[in-house]
Image (cartoon, rainbow, N blue to C red):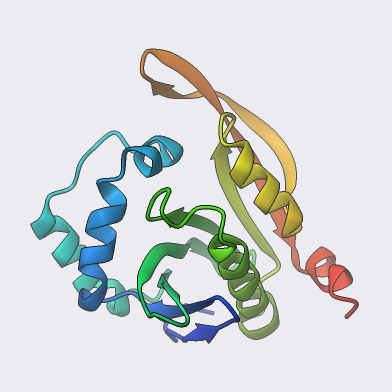
Length: 185
C-alpha cells in the first residue's frame, strides 16, 4: 500500500492535481499569506528556492500524496491538500490542507477538496483512518472537518505558541466505516 499513484481528482468547484513545479507560484503565495501562516502555525519562512525544490520532488514520494487544489473553471491554484504519514500496516495516514488566503476562503474549495480526497483514500486506496490536527482558534476549519465526518478525539495542550500565547491542537479523525455510512454505502 503506497501513494505511488498520483491521481487527478475532479469535482464541481475544484480539480486536485499532483503538485509539481507548475504550482510553485501558488505555493509561494500560500506561504506568504499572513492569515494562512497563522492558521497553519507555520513559524519558518521557506525560500523561493526551497519551494521550487519541494514541489519538484512530490511526484517521487510513495509515502505521501501532495495535491494542488485548483479552481475547476479557471485552473488557478487555490491551495494544497496532502496525505502524509502513511502507515500501511494500520491502514492510516494524516491529512493537512491549506488554502492560499482570504481571496479563496469561504468558496467551498476546501470542503470539496476534502471530500474528493476522502473518497479516494477510502474507496480507491483502501485505508481505514485519516487523522489531522487543527488549532483551537481555527473554528472555520473545525466546522469543515466535522461536516466531512471528522470526529474530535483529543487535545494536544499548548501545542503552538503564537504571538506569545499558547494554543491547543485538536486531534480529529474519520474512519472508513463512518465515511461509508454517511454516504449510504
